Length: 270
Image (cartoon, rainbow, N blue to C red; front, side, top):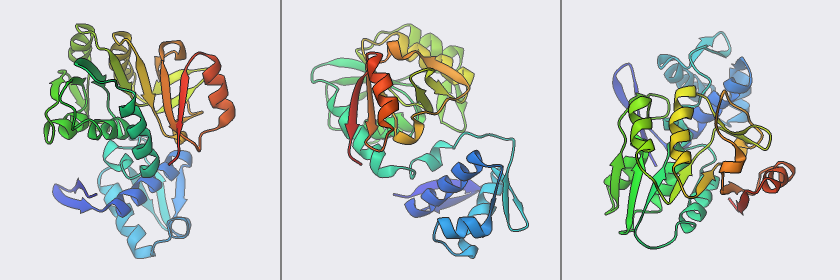
């Protein structure tokens, strides 16, 4: 799969392999304030010239600052942009999305799907359905459905968050608060038994909370890298979550704590 991104106003087509490298670089910077070229070259099994090009692209978009021998994180954002997330944990996300789609029963109904690469993957699994109305605040999810399916798509209004391509704010919340859906499928930036479902941005959290509040059933889709992570803003308590679909690399002890809180766990093999 190719991903179109931009640098200095010029379109660039990034292969899935490059997208995975970019994701890995940003993840490393989120965990540490700096990374070295030697370290990246070794860990990503790539040439120094390839890594330098990747760093130059990420610097042009404001995600890092190149240094002599590597790069350091900027204060711009710690959140991995959605256009780079798609290549990360790809096999796990495909398996998670397939299982989540199976949890949506047949018959005419309205469901809500949130933003994020795993939720968009769920949408890809629903393109053959003709009995669904899908409400979303995600440009990525809407594109997946509207471009190649007969599913009825309803979008909220709102302000676009450039890192997640989600519509957030009072317009989005108002639209979501005015409807009821049989099910909400939502991603997560962090999930723990103690802190529930969390995300990087407080405005996005409020919008996602509206999606959770008006659903008969809430299904969280998250790869195992999100388990045990706590982000800035809480979206929902685990008592409000019906199901968690996650890959089998997830920490079994943390999953057991979550299951004791009444959440049905669906573990899938990546």
